[in-house]
Length: 360
Image (cartoon, rainbow, N blue to C red; front, side, top):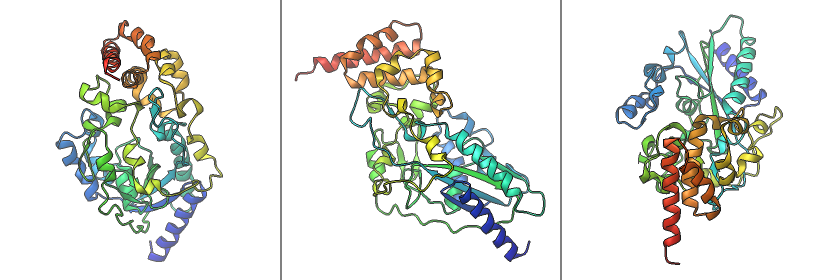
């Protein structure tokens, strides 16, 4: 394809993405980068914990050309969440949910839109094309390719940061065999700032830009199915799904921004927090049976932790809350027949009791 044809096709592909509701769109080459190749070392150092799915198809995660034969370009897109007032901050009897998980499942919302984009993309060319799209659903490092495509830079907290929209972003990619022109990358603007590294409740960053997942509260509340180590439980605070601290303290998220870009297709509206997950009380969470949990988490990324996982997290949060109104609910789980929940309930009761015994 001639250079001017490639430039025109790239321009139309990018304009199409913006017209279809994405906030940012750019193009990266379909090839390994130093960041994708670092995954091998990161896993080798044990930082992936028990996330065995990262080891499977590792070479595809490193090299996108192994995902789609003949791949030449990666179209990366992002969608920002609307700014929110944090309703659970400082309220220990209210469970804190990571912002990205409070609305409809982002895999579904962005996945549907990306598949529609793929379909429309085929209409821009005079030949059949091959594409494959992902929204945190396959062996692709969306964050690394989004940074290479100029959608932002990967900060010291390992999140992609858009200089205007911050880091509360949903990312997706389309791997294609189209010879598109690569976008200019965004420089790293973290500078000497260490706010995220110093604010982490468990000091989970082995170094700037390097997260040890086994010390991260998001890993323990979402990915890990077993017991949360006692050394981590106090740091959990009132978090019952994920942790946003390293983003909350980031200066790029604390800049004044009253709203996200226009949202004519209501993608952001679907991702906005549902009322029950803005500030769920720990009492309500501890009373949920499995069927009620299924209804409350329908079409939600909160399904990721599982029913037992959410209860386990809520029990730890209850222990940290010191709220005597929660004792009876915790006691019911302590007297149950699930060893995982019995263990965490017993810890919660002991922690609550120790708080009452402290001199005032």
